[in-house]
Length: 274
Image (cartoon, rainbow, N blue to C red):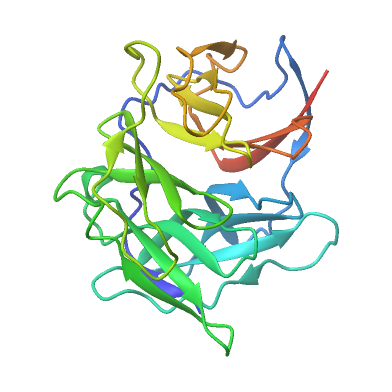
């Protein structure tokens, strides 16, 4: 199912425009390639599945006067066409991107918008029914009116959502998968985080956190989910001169990095740890 849209609401406004599309860097990573997506689609931010076998993202398809949107899954091992999530649009929204899923792939969280710019980004959740369709619910208990709620990451069991609001990382929790989430709270660190956060990613055990701030990747750790995260430190700044990056995600062994890139075109970049 493709949903008709007329606007693009995935990027922050502070993008610079001086970067030639050369994706080689000097740092921790070696550029490998870009994620293969059919030419008819425009790429939006996405994320690897928890097992690294799929890359889930929003794709737009343009006709002469209309753009269509939905969430798709790309098989990382087989060269097949992107598979649609068969998402039934939540009422009042027609754009979908920035998705994250649980271990069993039955629950996804994602960002929805309806031509309202960055501040119109809201987070929704969807459960897969017996027919394979995903039935969505906008997370009103999390979203703030006229404030961007974006770049969500859902835990493998579906009980915790981490996301970005007003350049700050928030977490919302629930006791069971059938309940609503509690009121979101800022994620706790061992000190004040001064860097404005754009997008986030966590390891499956939720003990390693990575986030992007002004094209620099930061990281923080904790020993258990009951503890606070360490004060973030720079993981790498080798992408700082790129026009725009967001939506990082790693494979399970942390050897391969995938990034959303926006410049003259939009792409998913693949890097390997040297």
